[in-house]
Image (cartoon, rainbow, N blue to C red; front, side, top):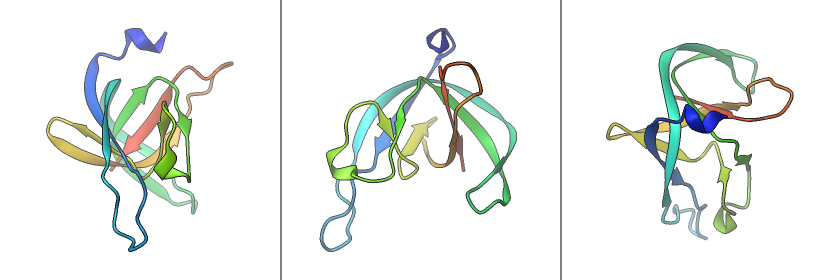
Length: 111
């Protein structure tokens, strides 16, 4: 269902972790079909504070990971990844899954 709404093209820059000197490893780019929505979105961060995002990216569901970046499987996403569109890189602030009987989409709120 979400596939018919994914009319925008973006690039997902996959974070691959750090080496033994804490230098970031080379990233990997992946094409992303999504729906980019601009507006003012008030969301709550992990500390309970209200933060404002100006962009929401709705995409097909992906597995959210918090570790194991060097051996990433396909169809995963992390808050350390970047989403690039319109020539600019955007950091991800938070993920949310729209409430439904089954998860059919994933929302990423950007800085």
